[in-house]
Image (cartoon, rainbow, N blue to C red):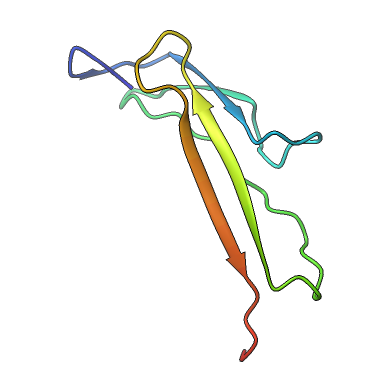
Length: 81
């Protein structure tokens, strides 16, 4: 997060993966001194019968341009491991 090109510390970012319970460690976090906010994405167990799965999440900063930022991960099961 930047304001006028400078890092903006202490700004609240809201995280959402659309799930209850969430797979995210925090629903809200504050930006650090470098303007970076973070959360941990704890993916669930995927049954052996499922070859791949997609998870989506987003980060939003109310009032900021470019909201929300979308994240997506595809998990593939290794068949030759």
